[in-house]
Length: 228
Image (tube, rainbow, N blue to C red; front, top):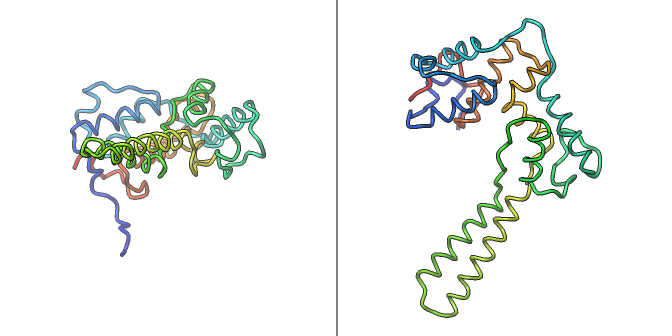
């Protein structure tokens, strides 16, 4: 199978609310807001990019790397929580902290005044959900006392697995978390000296759109249409 390398003609947004979700993600990251009249005429990613630029104070001078800034924030936070071992971008979060994923993400967002990053839901979480659904289905369909007991046990086991999966960072590394924080909080880091050149803003916007729509960022061009 040959992978597509040509620029995308469209992001495939249906306009049924998914476009609003993308808009909110961009507004949140860049620390800007759009009125309806600002977005009503946007047709392409290039149009969107120009609209974002018009809301920002750009610079021609190279600033700091926002991902590196986020990494040092994450590293400082983890060290303050007595995390074990050396902390590098490749370090797996599960290897250095015993804190639950939700607790880390919430406290980190509060301490750095950034937008909280969504929980990572790995295979354990989905396996637990499957167990829960099977247990509930068995409980509803069965009249056998033994099957009822087994179904109830499946529900309990599924719930335990789901909780364990949500609590775990899975394979997420410190670098992964730093990248996500930088991408979702560009405005916060720009205010602290992060690179705010137009080329950097284009890359951040492109990566945000890719994250929200599930496409490869390098396939997004200025001519890519927003709606399908």
